Each structure stands twice: as structure tokens, then as C-alpha cells.
Figure 1 (cartoon, one colour):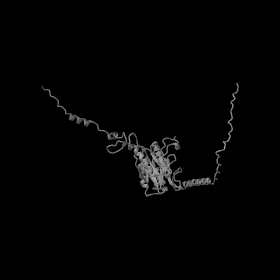
Figure 2 (spheres, rainbow, N blue to C red):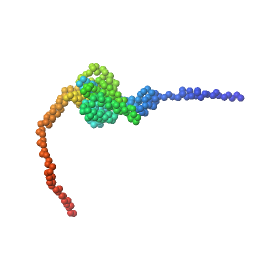
Figure 3 (tube, rainbow, N blue to C red):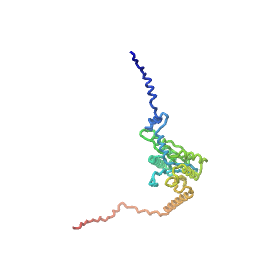
Figure 4 (tube, one colour):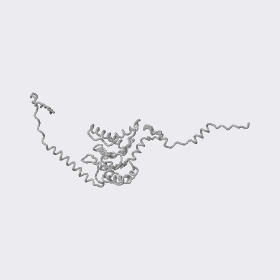
Length: 320
């Protein structure tokens, strides 16, 4: 008679108690649900695969581009992972797309090779169809359209590379463009991609004060910024690439600067004049060669010439 029954707990109270005890999800668990494909937007409107591709670029060597009044300067740092590597046979940071366009890359070199081949193909097709070089912005736009397609269709991944395009055309003159894995591109007076991008950009903002600067000052500015932001301690040909794009004989021509830093541009121009003189001398020599006399016409009814019969060879086998 003295036994009493314990009060029953409501199921709603147990559910609330379990919800309080259960650990909360980490903040990154939300992003894990939307980063499996490039075609899925997160609730914040972000494409995580594109952001991961940009993160891969931040681990590559620094590349700097500076626009000048009479040319464009591209400077890049090559990261040597081992002392046993051959610098001349390793992957480069600078590429020549056409006679009037040069490019610097930062990111996955294998992806950059695919895009460089596509850019060269577009430039040669335009030259074949219209008999004139392709405008720089049109070439960059065609390439960025292909990069954007790799962020929109399933089963593909974005290209993990950013690119700096330096070129000249008769419409806009000297130009400098930067493109990222998302397919966006912009024109710049001075920009940087790769590792230490924020530090290099802040230095460029401080040093690039005038609206436009000559090529000699742009070359010194690129070397100064690259020296302060690069991981290497000394400027050596094995660790750095330097390219200047100028006009020679009315045409734009990229030139790789293999001389030590601080060399004057007069020495490079003398080399170009020597090449032009050699070409002129060669063309004059070709014009001075007398023309070959015309051959006599063949007669149709003439009998064919007699040919000597083929000699017969007798193989003698030695007797044992």
C-alpha cells in the first residue's frame, strides 16, 4: 500500500534534453556539403571549388606585371625545389603566345600548358583567317571564356592557374591583363599574382605614383618589388625570369632579358639593330643572285632516251 509510482517524463522534455546535450556542428561542415562539385552554389552564393583553385595559386612563385608608356615588363620568381634540377630544362614562368603577346603564369604548370596551347591556337587561327594579328583583349576574352566553361559544367574542375598577358595592338597600344580561374579578367597598370600577392600589391601602390611611367622606370620598379617580396635572397638567372615587350621596327616583340639587373636598354637595342642589319644584308644578297636561265621545252614526239640495262650481280659462294 505504501508503494508510489515515479512520475513519467514527457517525450518532449527528453527530446529537448537530447538537443541540448548534442554537440554542435563545426562551422566548416556547411562548406563540405557544397564543395563536391563546381556546379553547386553554397547558401552564401559561393563556389568553393573556384576558391580552392585560387588558393593553389597562392603557393606558386610570384609574378609581377608593370605597364609603361613604351612597353610592358613581366618579372617572375621560379621556385627551385631541388639543387639537382636543370634550370634550362625545367618548367618556365614566361611564354610567348604570338609575336605581339607574352604571358606569365602562376599556379599549376600542367594547367598552364593547356591554356597556352589554346591561346596560341586562337592567335594563329585569327592570323590565318584575317591576315593580321589578333587584338590582345579579344585573345584574352576567348581564353577566359574557356576557363569559365570549366566552372559551369559537371565533371570538370577549374584551371588552377592565374595569368598575366602583356601585348600590343594598333587599337589600344600596350596593354596588361590579369585572369583568374573563374574566367574574370581586368586591365591593369601594375599587378601581381602568386605568393606574397598582398605585400607586392601594397608596394606597387606606394611606388607607382604617376599615371604612366617609361620602360626604364617600370623595369626598376618590377625588380625592386620582386626583390623585397620574393622568397629567394639573391637575384640570379636560375631563380628569376624577366621579359620586356617593346616595339622594334613598327612591330611588338617580346624579349627575354638574360643580362644582369641594371643593364641599360641601349645594349639590347644594339643587338636588335645588328639582327636587322643581318636580315637586310641577307635579303640584298638574295636579290643580287642572277636568275637561272629557262630550261628548253620538251618535245612530245621525241623518243625516250635509252637506259643502260641494270648490271646483273653473281654471288659466288666459297667452297669449303
